Image (cartoon, rainbow, N blue to C red; front, side, top):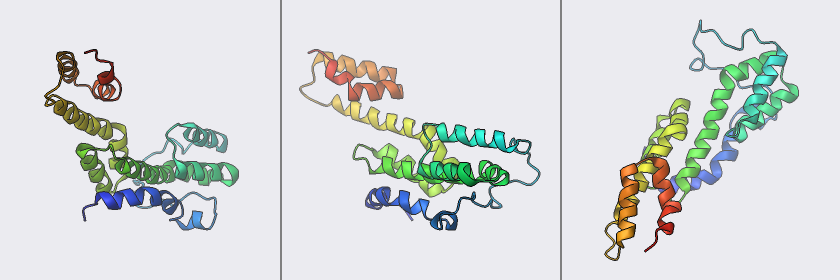
Amino acid sequence: MRLTRVTLAVAAGALAPALLLSTPSFAAGATTAPAATASDTTPGDGSPYDDMDIHDLRIAVLRILAAPDSGKRVTKEANALLDNGTEEDLRTWLETGYRLARFEDDQVAIFTILAKPSSGKGVYREATEALEAGTPEAARAFLETGYRLAQAEDDSVAIVRMLTDPDLTPAMRAAINAVLDDGTPEALRHFLEVGQYEVDG
């Protein structure tokens, strides 16, 4: 089923608390990591956490907690484990639980992006596809690379439309053509947010 913009906007405000309470462990206030599922692990695969003692495992969790992109679910679970988690709890979370917790945080982030009035067609298309894919990998790929590229697509369209202004000055036309020739996501975004207002004449 295709997601509608109204549905996404409403979900952006409601999804975060719902996700945090969606598992029995957190609904009951438990502190153990989520159980691994068959899709989360591959039999026979080694883990970098297998040989770590509880001290090293706690450091690994602390590093995740300190990351600027750690969301509410990751933060909640990591803090609970640091308070009361056993060595096995920490290891299980690092191997499987962290991936699932980050997925829920990533979904919240994508819904928040979709709820922004400034999100254009490219962002809407790519974000919706990432959500409908329903995998941690798809959500993470959108946030790390897909969003930047989709936003650049929308920014490029917005800048090209500026060329249709009958009152466009030669200086502004030259600036627009220059940024379109550059074509990088950073240059396009900077022009829309700042550069266009710095053009003289």
